Length: 240
Image 1 (cartoon, one colour):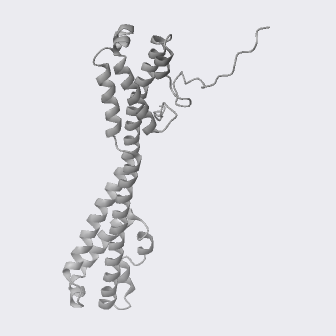
Image 2 (image 1 turned 90 degrees about the vertical axis):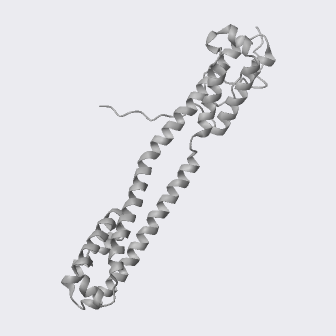
Image 3 (image 1 turned 180 degrees about the horizontal axis):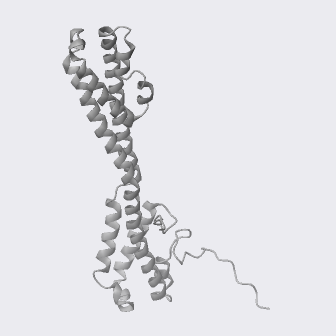
Protein backbone atom coordinates (compact mmCIF):
# COMPACT_ATOMS: atom_id res chain seq x y z
CA UNK A 1 0.00 0.00 0.00
CA UNK A 2 1.44 3.37 -1.02
CA UNK A 3 1.75 6.13 1.54
CA UNK A 4 -0.44 9.24 1.15
CA UNK A 5 1.32 12.14 -0.51
CA UNK A 6 2.18 15.28 1.42
CA UNK A 7 0.05 18.26 0.47
CA UNK A 8 2.23 21.13 -0.75
CA UNK A 9 1.45 24.79 -1.36
CA UNK A 10 0.27 25.41 -4.91
CA UNK A 11 1.85 28.87 -5.05
CA UNK A 12 5.34 30.26 -4.71
CA UNK A 13 4.84 33.32 -2.51
CA UNK A 14 4.39 33.83 1.24
CA UNK A 15 1.01 32.90 2.72
CA UNK A 16 0.30 36.49 3.78
CA UNK A 17 1.15 37.78 0.30
CA UNK A 18 -1.06 35.14 -1.31
CA UNK A 19 -4.02 36.08 0.87
CA UNK A 20 -3.47 39.79 0.23
CA UNK A 21 -3.37 39.07 -3.49
CA UNK A 22 -6.50 36.93 -3.29
CA UNK A 23 -8.42 39.65 -1.44
CA UNK A 24 -7.31 42.25 -3.98
CA UNK A 25 -8.41 40.11 -6.92
CA UNK A 26 -11.70 39.41 -5.16
CA UNK A 27 -12.26 43.15 -4.93
CA UNK A 28 -11.59 43.58 -8.66
CA UNK A 29 -13.86 40.64 -9.39
CA UNK A 30 -16.68 42.24 -7.39
CA UNK A 31 -16.38 45.44 -9.45
CA UNK A 32 -16.39 43.50 -12.72
CA UNK A 33 -18.88 40.87 -11.59
CA UNK A 34 -21.42 41.43 -14.37
CA UNK A 35 -18.81 40.72 -17.03
CA UNK A 36 -17.78 37.50 -15.31
CA UNK A 37 -21.44 36.47 -14.93
CA UNK A 38 -21.92 36.87 -18.66
CA UNK A 39 -18.75 34.95 -19.45
CA UNK A 40 -19.40 31.88 -17.28
CA UNK A 41 -22.40 31.17 -15.05
CA UNK A 42 -20.06 29.50 -12.54
CA UNK A 43 -19.10 33.03 -11.48
CA UNK A 44 -22.64 33.93 -10.45
CA UNK A 45 -23.72 34.13 -6.81
CA UNK A 46 -22.67 32.77 -4.41
CA UNK A 47 -19.23 32.56 -6.06
CA UNK A 48 -17.99 35.89 -4.68
CA UNK A 49 -19.24 35.08 -1.17
CA UNK A 50 -17.71 31.62 -1.28
CA UNK A 51 -14.39 33.16 -2.26
CA UNK A 52 -14.46 35.49 0.73
CA UNK A 53 -15.34 32.56 2.97
CA UNK A 54 -12.35 30.60 1.66
CA UNK A 55 -10.06 33.54 2.43
CA UNK A 56 -11.56 33.98 5.90
CA UNK A 57 -11.07 30.30 6.70
CA UNK A 58 -7.40 30.60 5.81
CA UNK A 59 -6.97 33.57 8.10
CA UNK A 60 -8.74 31.75 10.94
CA UNK A 61 -6.40 28.74 10.75
CA UNK A 62 -3.63 28.49 13.31
CA UNK A 63 -0.47 30.14 12.03
CA UNK A 64 2.76 28.12 12.10
CA UNK A 65 4.22 30.53 14.65
CA UNK A 66 1.23 29.88 16.93
CA UNK A 67 1.75 26.13 16.59
CA UNK A 68 5.42 26.51 17.50
CA UNK A 69 4.45 28.64 20.50
CA UNK A 70 2.04 25.97 21.74
CA UNK A 71 4.70 23.29 21.30
CA UNK A 72 7.17 25.42 23.25
CA UNK A 73 4.71 25.84 26.11
CA UNK A 74 4.04 22.10 26.26
CA UNK A 75 7.75 21.31 26.19
CA UNK A 76 8.40 23.76 29.00
CA UNK A 77 5.58 22.19 31.01
CA UNK A 78 7.08 18.72 30.65
CA UNK A 79 10.55 20.01 31.54
CA UNK A 80 9.14 21.62 34.69
CA UNK A 81 7.46 18.36 35.76
CA UNK A 82 10.66 16.41 35.07
CA UNK A 83 12.59 18.77 37.30
CA UNK A 84 9.99 18.46 40.06
CA UNK A 85 10.26 14.66 39.84
CA UNK A 86 14.06 14.79 40.08
CA UNK A 87 13.89 17.10 43.09
CA UNK A 88 11.30 14.92 44.85
CA UNK A 89 13.39 11.81 44.27
CA UNK A 90 16.55 13.42 45.62
CA UNK A 91 14.62 14.34 48.76
CA UNK A 92 13.35 10.77 49.03
CA UNK A 93 16.91 9.46 48.71
CA UNK A 94 18.02 11.56 51.65
CA UNK A 95 15.50 9.88 53.93
CA UNK A 96 16.00 6.42 52.44
CA UNK A 97 19.68 6.61 53.33
CA UNK A 98 18.79 7.99 56.72
CA UNK A 99 16.36 5.12 57.35
CA UNK A 100 18.50 2.43 55.71
CA UNK A 101 22.18 3.43 55.99
CA UNK A 102 24.49 1.41 53.72
CA UNK A 103 21.64 -0.96 52.84
CA UNK A 104 22.23 -1.21 49.09
CA UNK A 105 19.60 -3.91 48.44
CA UNK A 106 16.93 -1.56 49.81
CA UNK A 107 18.46 1.38 47.96
CA UNK A 108 18.14 -0.56 44.73
CA UNK A 109 14.48 -1.22 45.51
CA UNK A 110 14.14 2.56 45.41
CA UNK A 111 15.66 2.61 41.92
CA UNK A 112 19.16 3.84 42.63
CA UNK A 113 20.55 1.82 39.69
CA UNK A 114 17.85 3.04 37.29
CA UNK A 115 17.80 6.73 38.14
CA UNK A 116 20.56 7.98 35.80
CA UNK A 117 18.69 6.54 32.84
CA UNK A 118 15.22 7.57 34.02
CA UNK A 119 16.18 11.18 34.72
CA UNK A 120 16.87 11.68 31.00
CA UNK A 121 13.65 10.15 29.68
CA UNK A 122 10.11 11.38 30.22
CA UNK A 123 8.58 7.97 29.55
CA UNK A 124 11.04 6.22 31.86
CA UNK A 125 10.58 8.83 34.58
CA UNK A 126 6.83 8.21 34.60
CA UNK A 127 7.39 4.53 35.35
CA UNK A 128 10.25 5.31 37.74
CA UNK A 129 8.11 7.61 39.89
CA UNK A 130 5.34 5.00 39.99
CA UNK A 131 7.81 2.42 41.30
CA UNK A 132 9.33 4.91 43.77
CA UNK A 133 5.88 5.56 45.20
CA UNK A 134 5.12 1.84 45.48
CA UNK A 135 8.37 1.12 47.35
CA UNK A 136 7.97 4.20 49.55
CA UNK A 137 4.52 2.95 50.56
CA UNK A 138 6.11 -0.42 51.39
CA UNK A 139 8.60 1.26 53.74
CA UNK A 140 6.26 3.99 54.94
CA UNK A 141 6.74 3.27 58.64
CA UNK A 142 10.53 3.37 58.45
CA UNK A 143 10.53 6.55 56.39
CA UNK A 144 8.00 8.45 58.49
CA UNK A 145 9.96 7.43 61.57
CA UNK A 146 12.90 9.36 60.10
CA UNK A 147 10.77 12.47 59.46
CA UNK A 148 9.78 11.83 55.83
CA UNK A 149 6.08 12.86 55.79
CA UNK A 150 3.49 10.50 54.37
CA UNK A 151 2.28 13.42 52.24
CA UNK A 152 5.63 13.40 50.46
CA UNK A 153 5.13 9.73 49.66
CA UNK A 154 1.82 10.54 47.99
CA UNK A 155 3.42 13.48 46.22
CA UNK A 156 5.57 10.98 44.33
CA UNK A 157 2.41 9.52 42.79
CA UNK A 158 0.93 12.95 42.10
CA UNK A 159 4.06 14.06 40.26
CA UNK A 160 4.06 10.82 38.28
CA UNK A 161 0.47 11.46 37.18
CA UNK A 162 1.15 15.10 36.30
CA UNK A 163 4.25 14.20 34.29
CA UNK A 164 2.36 11.43 32.53
CA UNK A 165 -0.45 13.82 31.57
CA UNK A 166 1.96 16.55 30.40
CA UNK A 167 4.02 14.09 28.39
CA UNK A 168 0.94 12.55 26.75
CA UNK A 169 -0.38 15.99 25.82
CA UNK A 170 2.97 16.92 24.30
CA UNK A 171 3.21 13.70 22.27
CA UNK A 172 -0.36 14.03 21.03
CA UNK A 173 0.33 17.59 19.92
CA UNK A 174 3.45 16.44 18.07
CA UNK A 175 1.36 13.84 16.29
CA UNK A 176 -1.39 16.33 15.51
CA UNK A 177 0.82 19.10 14.19
CA UNK A 178 1.26 17.64 10.68
CA UNK A 179 -2.53 17.32 10.45
CA UNK A 180 -2.98 20.97 11.45
CA UNK A 181 -0.40 22.04 8.87
CA UNK A 182 -1.91 19.95 6.08
CA UNK A 183 -5.41 21.25 6.84
CA UNK A 184 -4.15 24.80 6.68
CA UNK A 185 -2.31 24.26 3.39
CA UNK A 186 -5.42 22.66 1.87
CA UNK A 187 -7.47 25.75 2.73
CA UNK A 188 -4.77 28.09 1.43
CA UNK A 189 -4.62 26.16 -1.82
CA UNK A 190 -8.40 26.42 -2.18
CA UNK A 191 -8.25 30.22 -1.94
CA UNK A 192 -5.37 30.28 -4.42
CA UNK A 193 -7.14 28.02 -6.91
CA UNK A 194 -10.15 30.38 -6.92
CA UNK A 195 -7.83 33.33 -7.47
CA UNK A 196 -6.10 31.64 -10.40
CA UNK A 197 -9.43 30.66 -11.95
CA UNK A 198 -10.69 34.24 -11.83
CA UNK A 199 -7.44 35.66 -13.16
CA UNK A 200 -7.42 33.26 -16.10
CA UNK A 201 -10.97 34.23 -16.97
CA UNK A 202 -10.29 37.92 -16.43
CA UNK A 203 -7.44 37.95 -18.93
CA UNK A 204 -9.78 36.44 -21.53
CA UNK A 205 -12.73 38.72 -20.73
CA UNK A 206 -10.59 41.86 -20.88
CA UNK A 207 -8.22 40.87 -23.68
CA UNK A 208 -9.00 44.17 -25.41
CA UNK A 209 -8.88 46.33 -22.27
CA UNK A 210 -5.30 46.62 -21.06
CA UNK A 211 -6.13 48.36 -17.78
CA UNK A 212 -8.64 45.68 -16.81
CA UNK A 213 -6.44 42.96 -18.26
CA UNK A 214 -3.57 43.99 -15.98
CA UNK A 215 -5.83 43.73 -12.95
CA UNK A 216 -5.95 39.98 -13.41
CA UNK A 217 -2.25 39.38 -14.04
CA UNK A 218 -0.50 37.20 -11.48
CA UNK A 219 2.89 38.30 -10.19
CA UNK A 220 5.94 36.49 -11.50
CA UNK A 221 6.88 33.58 -9.29
CA UNK A 222 3.48 33.26 -7.67
CA UNK A 223 2.55 30.13 -9.57
CA UNK A 224 -0.39 29.27 -11.79
CA UNK A 225 -0.18 28.76 -15.51
CA UNK A 226 -0.09 32.47 -16.27
CA UNK A 227 2.27 35.00 -14.79
CA UNK A 228 2.68 38.69 -15.30
CA UNK A 229 4.63 39.68 -18.38
CA UNK A 230 7.72 41.85 -17.83
CA UNK A 231 6.98 45.56 -17.62
CA UNK A 232 9.47 46.27 -20.42
CA UNK A 233 9.40 43.25 -22.70
CA UNK A 234 12.20 42.91 -25.23
CA UNK A 235 11.25 44.18 -28.70
CA UNK A 236 10.57 41.55 -31.35
CA UNK A 237 13.41 40.79 -33.72
CA UNK A 238 13.38 42.86 -36.96
CA UNK A 239 11.60 41.37 -39.90
CA UNK A 240 14.11 40.25 -42.55
